[in-house]
Length: 238
Image (tube, rainbow, N blue to C red; front, side, top):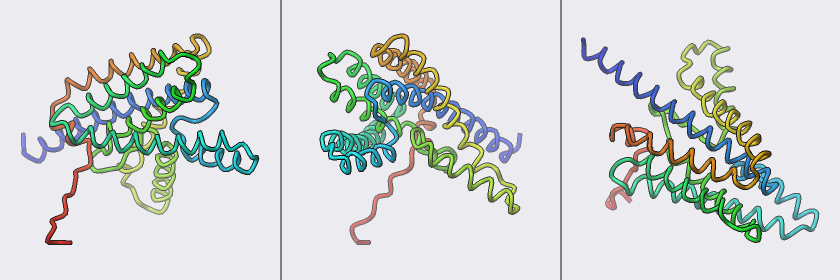
């Protein structure tokens, strides 16, 4: 086997593994999004929607709801930041650490009493921000796990490029994977919530643990490959 052929096979295996992980994590995100929306009436990962709803609440004089949503936006941002810190502080098994933390947050939200609905909402939002750090890229291409609008935008622009003669589908066909995973997960989450209520969060927490344990079988280089590298600027370059 030539070196070029071997590199091609390694890259193909790496891409396939990454997309399988993206599909699984997007499925979890879709389940959580549907469960959170049904239980709270607000989005737990769609911060564009929460921004618009918060603005409408301000215009309607519902300042309490507006503050809740603006708070959710900052909790989501905090979750993304925390996910990156966790992913880059551990030396190995980064996806496992991130997903395990997500599972703990979801499990905590599932056991909160009914008097703590806002706390439950924020814990779920925090977990959805954090989950984005599981996979940041596939072969150098950005991938969104909860930012499905971005995936669809990249997919649409890819179709446009194909129509004007660009025959390289690599950069945009993979964007259908997170959308498909989230859509399937949202349908599943909605059905589970209608039958189990708040206990649906414990189901998604257990599923997250299963996926987290599965990632332990991945070689360490793959965990590193799915994260964007950290660029440290030298002080003398400032």
